[in-house]
Length: 272
Image (cartoon, rainbow, N blue to C red):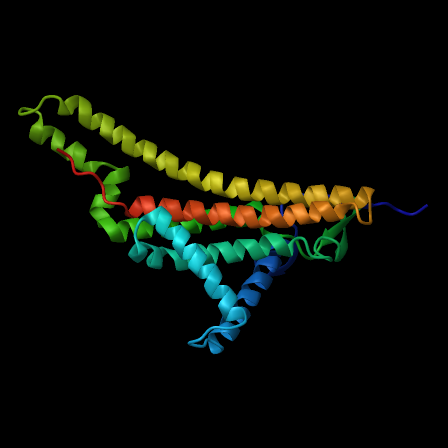
């Protein structure tokens, strides 16, 4: 009787090898592959840029122009769009390629067998990076740090800090309390609202990361189930569906970052 080999989709990325104390997981390998592909593609396109576009350059310019017009609708300013769009497109292409790479043959089926608790377990060498919560959380965290950098540059460090930790309102209480006693009520409320903004930023990171992870991971589980039940033809519509889901999720993540950045850079209403 043949010994059964356990193979299941896990919420966590499996470690493949270690570099010192650093564990390299199968999702991290996929991220590296996508990064290398993007760099090679970018440098190859850069060398072939012409004043009169043709071929791949023509297609890329159409895509960039479409994103630029979309960005103008969100920011309301071509100047702001030109500043923000390179960051947004970087997230879009990185996430899109990671979403699609997880659908390629061999991703999830090429690996090694290890022993865990006396049971043989199959560990794949490759795993879609965006099907790993660590990756999506890292993307969301980096994106929000960039959003706040843009906001800080646009408003200045002191003004932007007071949006979240309203020190200005706290300092104004003893200064204005005799002239306007209502500051004893209004200013603490505004300070509390600033603290809610901090909670909102944490919620943004959770929302961005869990939305992307949940959709991509669920899609991979669905494809695995369909492939196990029906090996031929039947999974094809689901693969087409996941291609669309990968594109849509990359668009949603990128547009949300564009909106957050635009809001952080928007001029604040002056207080009366």
